[in-house]
Every structure is written in structure tokens, then in C-alpha cells.
Image (cartoon, rainbow, N blue to C red):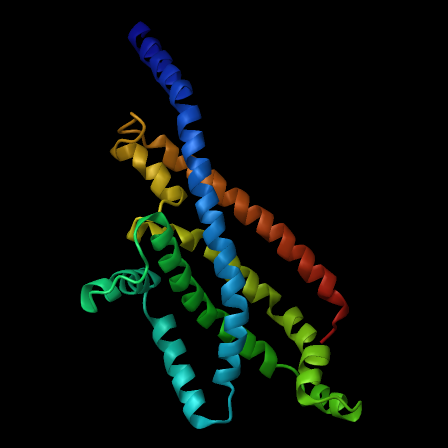
Length: 240
């Protein structure tokens, strides 16, 4: 019994000794995760809207090509897309376009995530736009607005109201999907936590840092859930 408490005491002592090092490393990894999340969101939202226009285009060539592209991206794993985008130029063309180091891996990951999530967002945008009654467009014409003015002044806010719930789900999923970037050795938070299992900063065989990474994800997801919920309530005046 005495040996048990002595061993437990040693484990607690080791934990409190290692915690500052682990906490600092996880913070650095989380900042990289947050950076990837923000850049992806900023790039994927407008690109998704553009792709949705292509999917709804009356030009058959544009429509077919866009839908084929969306089908390929949505139908293949994001992890595979990361590997292809990062390694393909160097291995096949012998021209590594991303450069070396962490910055190159981050750029490749950002491009991969933006393309992937833009395709998912495009389908949400398309569904929202096509759900608006034709009468809304006719009302804009009666007011003397052009098609572009009608879309941005009359239709777009109503679309946003309808797509917030499904878009919120994709955005929260994006927070967790950033962990896939470790496949190309981007040092995000999962990479930082897993490093202590393999040996990092003089610490090896420690699995407990992985459990703390979950706290970061829960915190980020919780903040986003609250913010997106408030946005949805603010848009309640659109009873469409």
C-alpha cells in the first residue's frame, strides 16, 4: 500500500514538472491550428459562393465541369487531397512549389483545406439560393434593381438565414479536421501532443498530453457554437 502511494506521488510530481513544458507546446500547436482554421474559412466561404454560381450556371460546359470538380473533391478523402497537393509537384514534376519548412507545409495545407471546404460550402450555398422563391427576384425587378443588385440586396441575407445551421455544422467540423494536416507534418496541436509520446523536450511515453488537446478542441467548438447560435438568432427577423 505504501508503494502504491509512493508511486502515485511520483507520478503527480512528474506531471506537475512536465505540465508547463507540455502546456507551452500545446499552445504553440493550437495557434497553428487556429491560423489554419481562420485562413481556410476566409478563403473557402467566398470561393464556395463562386463555385455555387458555376454549379447553377446555364452554360452546360461550366455547369458540368464545376459539378464534376465538386463531385471529385467531395468524394475523395481530405487526407488524400493533402498528400497529393503537397507531394505531387515535387515527385511528379520535380518542382516543389511549396518550399521547405513549416511555412511551405502550412501553405499546402491551407490550399487543400480551402479547395475541399469550398466545395462543401458551394453545395450549401446552392441549396440556399435555389430555395428562395422566384417572387423575391421579381420583386427586385419591380423595384428597378438589376439581377446583381437583387441578389446582394434582397436575396443574399435570406440565403444566409437559411444556410447558417448547415454551415455551422461544417465550420465546427473544420475545427476538428485541421488535425489531418499532421499527415504532411504540419505541427498543429495533435502533432504537438503526440510528440510527447515519441519523445519531445525530454519527455517520452506520455499519453496524457493527448487528452489535453481535446480540451482545446472542446473550447474552440464551444465558442463557435455560441457565436453561430447568436448569429442565427439575429437573423430571426427573416421569416422565410
